[in-house]
Image 1 (cartoon, rainbow, N blue to C red):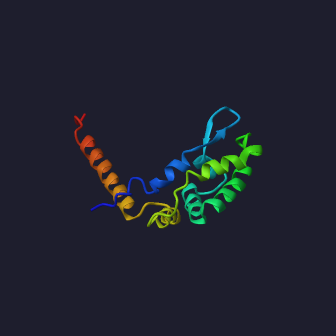
Image 2: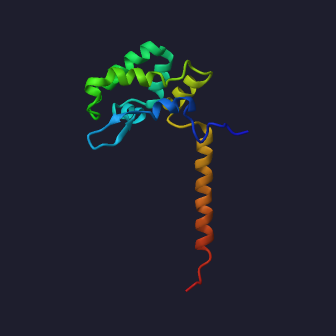
Image 3: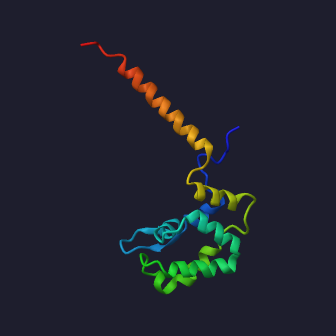
Length: 141
C-alpha cells in the first residue's frame, strides 16, 4: 500500500502554527510563520520540528529572536515577544512519533522518497503516450 504522506510529506500537526499570521507587511498583506521562516532562509518544517523538540519556553525564546530579525513586518520590531508567545501556543505539545524524522527526512533528501520518482516516471510515460497518440493520427498531407 502507498505511503499516506506521498502527497503531503510535511507533518499536518505543524499546519496550525505555520499558517498563523505574524502580522501585516508594509503593503498590508498578511505574513505567515511559514513565509517568515522561509524569508529568513530557514526551512519552515525543519525549524518547526526543532522548536517542538525544544519545549514551549525555549521555543518561545528562539521564535522571539527569529521574529526580531524579520524586518518585513514593522510591528514585529517592538512586539516580537508577544507575537512569539502567542505563536508558541500553536505548536504541538510534543513530537508525535515519526514527526521529527519525517520533517527532517523531507528536508535532507529534498523529496518525499521513492514514490515521488515513481510518479515522475509515470508522468513521463503518460506524456510520451499522449504524444504518440496525437502525433500518429495526422491526415498525411
